[in-house]
Image (cartoon, rainbow, N blue to C red):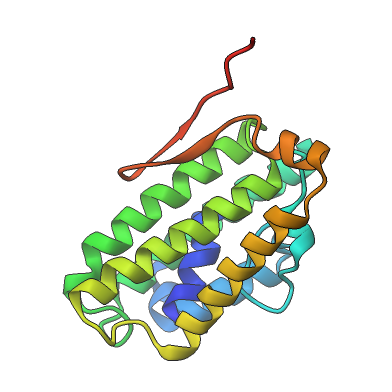
Length: 200
């Protein structure tokens, strides 16, 4: 598993409850795979964007917030991914030092999405779209610094996700589209800004 996929999953989740010895023995990939395959991870990534073969257009058009059970699972996954994040940024073979500010920005955006999901404020479909946007921003940021910083397969996967997101927006029923956009969420600098539309 490559760093971007690892980061995508870190986005929505946040931690890996492992001892220091276990952390050094595990790579970021295996740490994340453990989190993803856990009972809580399976619950969470059945709904949330994982940047793998489980992702479908249905994940982008889900107008509902996570259920209380899913939010509990998300909180556990978030706690488990925090140490996976540390593995990413400390692994020199995966992440050169110059990438650290971009990773930290990405993690900040991930935490913002997590907080809105955990509070039940953000619909799943909108959270997944924000995840894809955040992934794209990370890739754009590192590519501006170094043209070949994003592997071709990861760039292609991101392009496919963005195309799916556009197609999903065009095919969503007016009712679903209205429910997904009712919060008007978007990125302002590196902060998730959500506002309810004004009532007329």
